[in-house]
Image (cartoon, rainbow, N blue to C red; front, side):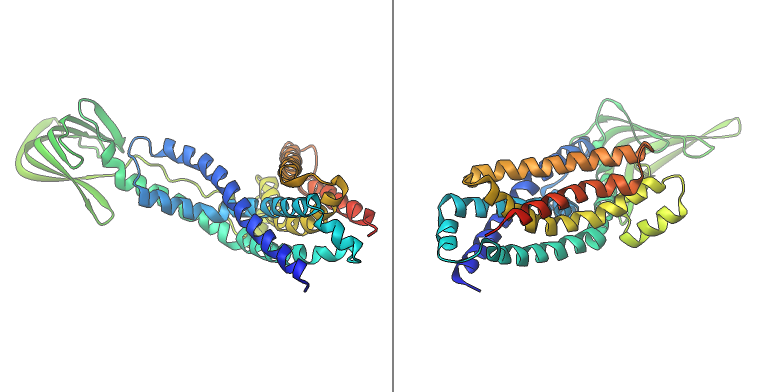
Length: 351
C-alpha cells in the first residue's frame, strides 16, 4: 500500500466519523422531539435520556453508515481532485482506479458493520427502547399527579389532590377506585408516593375508606392505607422493526394479511448494507466525472444522491403496499438503478 493510499484511508476514516456524527445528531434531534411528547407529563432525567439515545444508535446507524460512507468518499476525493493531488498522481503514472483500494477496504468494513446492525443489533435496540420507555413511564407516572385537578392517569382510578408540597408528598387526597365491582372511595389527610420493586404505591395516612357491600355503605378508619396503582399505559404491540431477519422471513410466509409489510422490511434489511458496496464504485467515479467540486460540492452531491435514493425507496414501498407493484420490485428497483449508475460511471473511467 502506497503512502498516498494510507493518507486517503486516514482522511476517509476522519470524514466517515464526522459524517456519522453529523447525520446521527440530526436524526437524534428528530427522535428527541418524539420522546419529549411521550414524557411531556412526567419528565425524564438526563441519565435515562442518554441511555435511550444510546439504545437508538443501532437503528440510526443502519441508515447513516451507508450515507456517511458516500459523503466521506465524495468529501475526500472532491478535495484531492480540487487540490490537483489526483492529477499529479495520474500524470506520474498511477491509474485512477488504483486509488479505489482505500474506499474498497473501508466499504467492506462498513458493509459488514451495517449487515450486523441491520440483521441483529438494530431489532434488539428497538425492543430495548420500547421496554425502557414503558418502564420509565410506569416509574414516573406518579410525577404526573397534579394538584387541584382530577387525575386519571391510572387504570380505573381517579385521584384528587388539594396540595402537592413536593414530588413525593401529597395533602388532602381523595381517591375513587372502580377497578373492582365494589367501588371504593378513600379520603386521607396525607399521602406519600413510593416505588416498591415493580409496584407503585400510595401510602395514605390518617383517613377513611368507604366501600359498598350490596346496598350497604361501609366506613373504615385507618392510620395508614397502602394503595397500589397501575399506570394507564397500554401494552405496545411489537413493531415490524423489532423482528430479526429470520423472524421476518418466517412472518411473511405465515402472516398473509401483512405479508407485503414484512417483505418490504425484510428486503430493506438486505439492501441497506449493499448500498455500502455500491457507494465504493459510484462515488469515486462520480467525483472524477464532475471535476473540481471540492468539499462543498461533495456534500451537496452526496446529500442529493442519497435523498434521491430514499425518495425512490419510499415511493417503491408505497406502490408495493398499495398493491400496484410487487414488494420485490418496489424494494429492489432503487438498488438496481443506483447499481447500474455505479457500473456505467465506473466503466466510463479509462485511466
